[in-house]
Length: 160
Image (tube, rainbow, N blue to C red; front, side, top):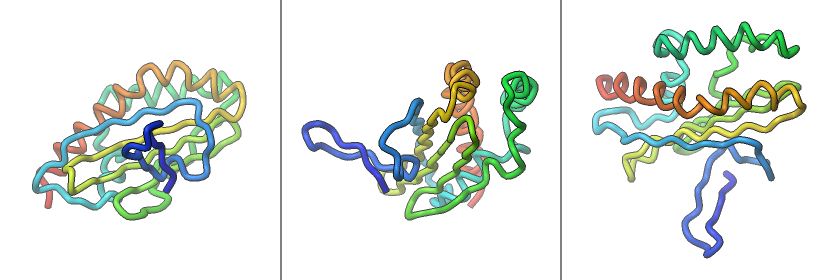
């Protein structure tokens, strides 16, 4: 796992999303309190977070808009399984999608000791189309993921 350290050598922030990367073009981290009765399994959190069936209606509409706009930029539709968990290491699940235009990574971590769920997203642009596509997306990305995380938190607080 790669880490980011403070200049004074203070606590490091670690995420599978940074593995092997020296740079990224966009990044955000969203946190939520881990409900007491919820699972600590990061795979379950990641799969529930990215479940199309449970996405908020406005997020589904945004994804539909993405599907309509992408071909105008010469981008292909995202393949099936784009948000599948690629690997789980320790307390974090990694989702990754690589195409010619951009590379997207999302680490979904569950820190049971601190009772925090963490969603780390990083994007690297591979060409100008990736930048043109993702620049407007970046404006709403924290709202979309925040909404998805709140829904996931509610769903997993009820299940054990």
